[in-house]
Length: 196
Image 1: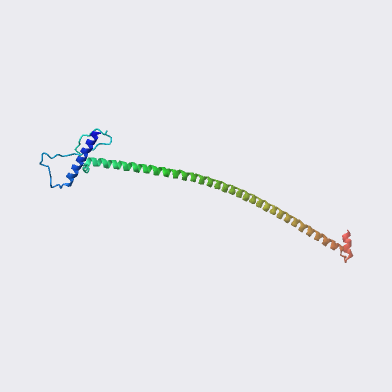
Image 2: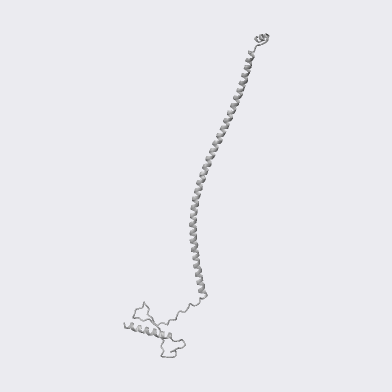
């Protein structure tokens, strides 16, 4: 306990002396030539350090800004930045390529579906064309048969009309003969000649 109190008193005294030193103007350098002037340094205990122990006094120099980078270190940092950017670009390209491939696979699937539908439509159209061809060939065949039937009928009608005309002319000729036979004959000599 006593060590702590001593330590705390010492710290308070050093802090007060530091404040006094700060309050004085820099032009008034008191004790610079005085051998009794004592330079106090503040020592603070680290939290990890046990309470009874003291840390050795350190001359701490206030931190200065970083020294300017030499060209080798600058090139190294530039190289690291370029490699990092290249890796980032490559990773972006890989992600973009993966997205494109996913879209490509979706598009190829859609194209395959469309191709299947077009094949179905094509098969249906071919089936319709085949049915139409069969119907046209049946119609052509029926038309040819009808034309042949009409020609055959026409020929028969012509034959029958010729037969009919012959029969009519034969009938007329017979009627004319019958008429001639029914008519009275003016000279009897012709009758006797007929009888012979």
